[in-house]
Length: 543
Image 1 (cartoon, rainbow, N blue to C red):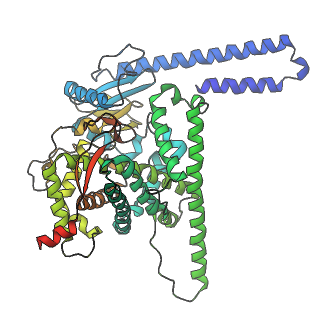
Image 2: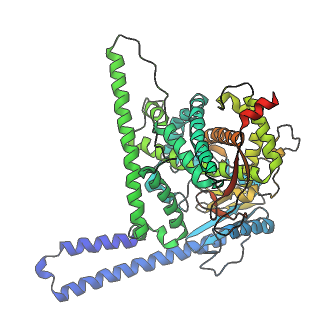
Image 3: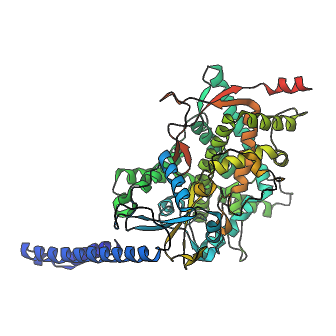
């Protein structure tokens, strides 16, 4: 495709360089013939190279079993469904091939799908210096997230990771628990109002996603959007961008920028992107100016500096420096803040929703978690979960982990490598092939059993059998943030409400069909029935 673009540019340059008097009809036709011939030649060369590359990968990946394809050229294009049936297809792949198989999306993408811990481990634990984020999934995020820690590679990634690590230190996360409590209270007050109106059958994703966005906006920007109660242009733009990325990934022709940016979806993406980038840019620039002003005031004044307000994510990024004393630029901070918002709200919302869903389906585990939270709250005036309380919720944490195993928010991660990767059984993934680590395939076991995560359980779990946050040097940097928010929200929800499976009003059924998008959702929403509880009276009666 690059050849076509270059030929077009060359043709334009040629036309502009010809004197106007030469451009007779005959001369113009002659020039167009030359241009057309060049374009045709470029297309032929590109096609031949594509087919040769496809033949080479087909041969070199023959050490992996290959599920039946439509044809040599189309491969498995269009065979994997993005709905419940897609999960059943993965189940069948795991049962049939046990550890791995190769998968071709037309002649364009060549994948090795991996779903066994012994095969997952060498891929995820490979040094970051040879690990590259591939084009199949991450490229579509680049216009939004820039060269952030999620997408960048090599030394750029290494420096970003080092500079970002302090933003997820325990001391910082402690201060965020206050925000989690506040956002949960807003959500639960809304649910109580709906219950008073007789509306107890609630779609979880709509409510929980707004709550996690509310939390992240406060943690990242100290910005109170009030998005749980009213609409926000910024929040709406983030939701639209996530949906458009999913749509683009599913349409193979939209994978080429020169096609996508001319479509209506591409134009909508740019409009939403302008809103998000303008918001983040304004926050970063205003905060940098404020910090500079504070620094100047403290330098010029002999008075002891006033106590600082809680530092948010942007503040920490503005203040962090590398070993050479260099900080992040405004553009780099904007990219990391956008990444924090993108990667932090939808994934955590999905994890919370599916945890509540699993507890609604297993009443005895739900009651055991609720009792654990009530025991923690005994003797307290209010109902707030503090950082120090998180380690005192062992069974609730086990249920969260089991839900993350069964319904991991992210169904897989993909990588490319700058060298051949050797896997068990003398199988080799060729340099340049995409390795798709199926978190779902690695995790999946239909039985819900939180006790598998009991520290006293003597059945040791295989290394890399549980990887909801990926693993290795490029694992999720925000996993402690996510687990803290999960425990706070789940605990407070169980303290205030009894959960039972709800009914999808569209088809009057309590059945749930899983829906893999950027994160795991449910077709038609995830509906639960909520019964408000007066735990204060219950605690008093226990005493």
